[in-house]
Image 1 (spheres, rainbow, N blue to C red):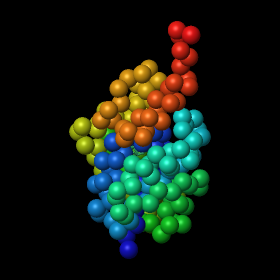
Image 2: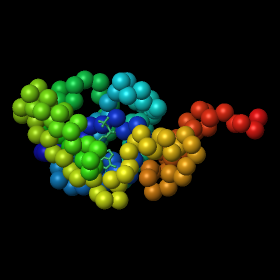
Image 3: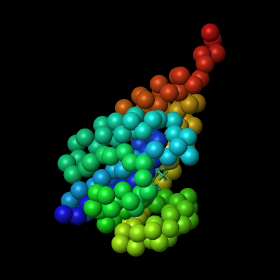
Image 4: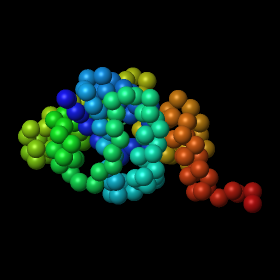
Length: 166
Ligand code: ADP
């Protein structure tokens, strides 16, 4: 049985993540979406909220499991018996950081291989951080994130922005 892990912060989950998942899922018996707490990034959504939103988004895909984790990513792969780590690469923005992490992970765990899938052209501009900025300023999120994510973002935005007419 071939198992791959797609780790990330997913704060929040976007259609760019979804695209990588759909393309990776057909290559392996099981794809585990592993969500790390990543307090260093000061996530907008709690780990539990992010797990719930990703679970809703992938509910129709048969061979996907969603799991939170708080250990080193390569240790998580060892724990679940996975040999392949999946990451997505957008033009210009991701390569340097991914390469740096890949070299570190290779040092820590030489038995794990990294597989990077190129972001599809229509998702090149999609990033969780930009989505959060757009949401806070009340922008439209259609076509960028699944509806439950859009609803959760609108709720967060409403809680953050005081109603100026009051
Ligand atoms: P991390 O904090 O680990 O970068 P993210 O949730 O931001 O977590 O991203 C997880 C993975 O998904 C990374 O490999 C990232 O490059 C990739 N990714 C993010 N947005 C997109 C996108 N629009 N298209 C393809 N891959 C993406």
